[in-house]
Image 1 (cartoon, rainbow, N blue to C red):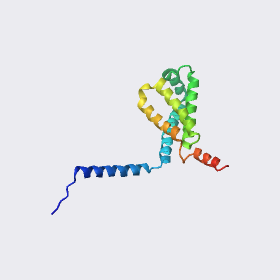
Image 2: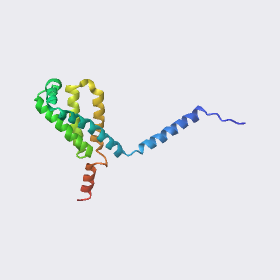
Image 3: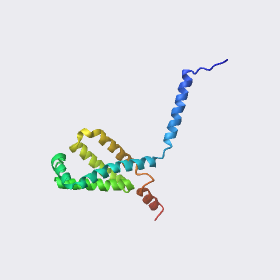
Image 4: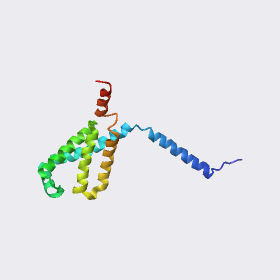
Length: 157
C-alpha cells in the first residue's frame, strides 16, 4: 500500500490557492454594494443624532451651551447648524444625492466633534471618517441619485 504524505511545500501551495480563490471571490463583490452600505450606515448615525437633538430642543441648547463649548459660535446657532447639517447630510447620503458634498459636510461635523467636544472618542470618529472618506473618494455608487443624474446628463437629456 502506497500512502502519500503531504509535504510542507504542497501544503503551502494549497493554502496559497485557497487564499487566491478567496481574494478572487471577495473582489467580485460589487463596489456599489459597499458604497450603498456605507452611505446607509453613516447616514443612520447622523440621522439619529439629529433626531435626538430635535426630540428635546431645550436640552440640546443646554448641551451646546455647557458641554460642547464650540469656540466663536453662539450655542443656539451652533445647535441649529449641527442639526441642519446632520439632517441634510444624512438625507443626501441615504439618497446618494450630492453625496460627495454631503460627505464633506459631515466630515466637518466629525472634525468639530473630535477636536472640540469628544477628543477621547477618536476610534468611533475614525470609523465614521473612514466611511465618509470612502464616499468622498469613490462616490455614492450606481445605486444613487447622483449616478442616475450623471447617466441622464451623459445621454444628453
